[in-house]
Image (spheres, helix red, strand yellow):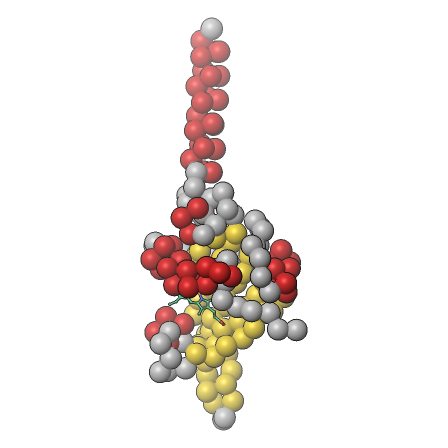
Length: 164
Ligand code: HEC
């Protein structure tokens, strides 16, 4: 009998753990190991004087995994769960009339999971300082990221557009 009670408690604990890990908004956005092998979508240099210079000054590249790429290429539509977009930002070095990449500043990630990230349009937002998987930057995904991306609600919160 005692064994049975222990077993029931153990089971209840597991169920509770699973429930917590899957409740909306609590799932951590994973660092993306392989994004450098994904499809490059675009590159942009943001220079002093641009309104986003303080947060995003430098040179950045946007990457999409295959799931996200389908929607980008179609030009519209809802990104399916499992879609991932990466914004990889570097300092821009302006030398000898050439602009090149300096140090990596931040690697920002958007992961689509409409079950987890219900408060931020179905996207999980995270950013990793210096591209370091252990240095998470986002404190409040709504304030830090989502609010600005809501300007793109008609494109499922994504700014970047595909060009052939
Ligand atoms: C002030 C507005 C603003 C804020 C705040 C912001 N972003 Fe963005 N984000 C943009 C813009 C504009 C682009 C498109 C850049 C381009 O066209 O090259 C973008 C692009 C991206 C992309 C590539 C996909 C896309 O939408 O084009 C990712 C990933 C991304 N942001 C993640 C984040 C994360 C994570 C945060 C929070 C740490 C964040 N962003 C905060 C404006 C913002």
